[in-house]
Amino acid sequence: MALFRIERQSSLPAAETWRRLTDWERHAAHVPLSAVTVRPAGPTRPGTVVVVRTGVGRAGFEDPMEVVRWDPPTDEGAGFCRLEKRGSVVRGWAEIEVRPGDGGGSRVVWCEEARVRGLPRLFDAPTAWSGRLLFGRVVDALLKEQQRPAVRPRESG
Image (cartoon, rainbow, N blue to C red; front, side, top):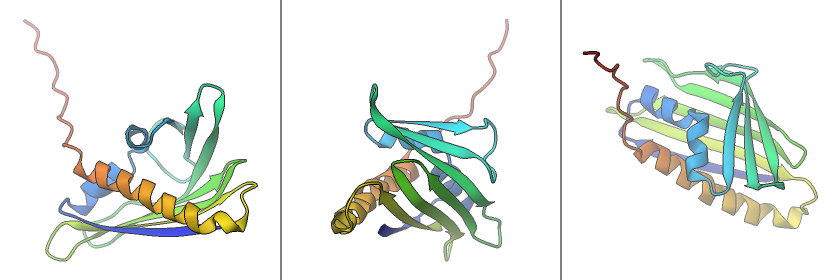
C-alpha cells in the first residue's frame, strides 16, 4: 500500500477551493492520458461514482471511486470528502479536507492510499512518491486556474 499526503495553502476561500478540487471532470485536464466521468450526473453526494480512465484507446484501465462521505465546508468548519477506490487495478481510498485558513484563504489536506494489483510492496515508496508528485501538481493547477466567467444569456434583438 502506498500512502501519501499533500498539504497546500490557498488564498481562495474554502468554498471556492472545495468547488475547484471537487469539480471532478476538471482533474482530467491536468492528468496526462486521462478522462473523467461522473455517475449519476448532478451534484456530488454519497453514492456518486467518479471514474478515471487512464490510457489510450483500448490500452488502459478504469479507476472507479465511490464518494462515501460528502461534507462541504461551511463558514464555521472544514469540508471533508472520502472516496473509496473500487477498481480491479487500483484499490484504496482518497480523502480531501478543506478548511478555512487563519486570516482568510483556506488549507487543503489530501491523503491517499493506493494499492496497485500485482505490484509488489517493493514499489510502495516509488508509488507514493509519484502519487504525491502527480496529485500535488493537480491540486496546484486546480487552485491556480483562472476563475471561469459566468455564462451570460445572449441578448435577442
